[in-house]
Image 1: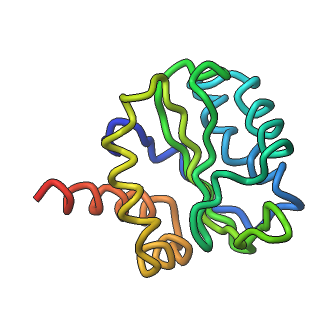
Image 2: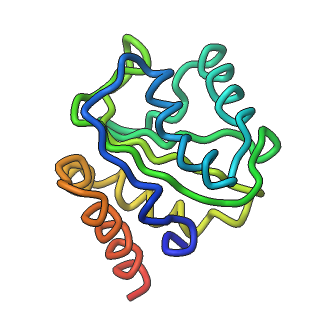
Length: 152
């Protein structure tokens, strides 16, 4: 679940980015540095975005950055990037402040984590709480709490 796929050091808060490509890059840096994905994963996501649009912008303020396991996933993991200034991935897309990067090593191992994440991106208050977080620990705790609430 989330506790198995997210490390506190993979959560970071930045003031803003210049464009959507930089947002993707920043969201994936912890996964590359941690050895969870290869550089090809980022290239594949950017290429797919240019071809099909920002398929991962799921709600206002929320994007689930992901690609196919075969695009360079070495081990399942999550990272979270909070942007103080939102970025738009296309003229007609929502502005995004919370980017969750998902590296799924297969088509099933991340399903439980996705269940937790879906409770967040379907709840505007939870997205706002994430977007207003003051530090990485607050973001981590919010996700762990959401996970434990689902298990009750």
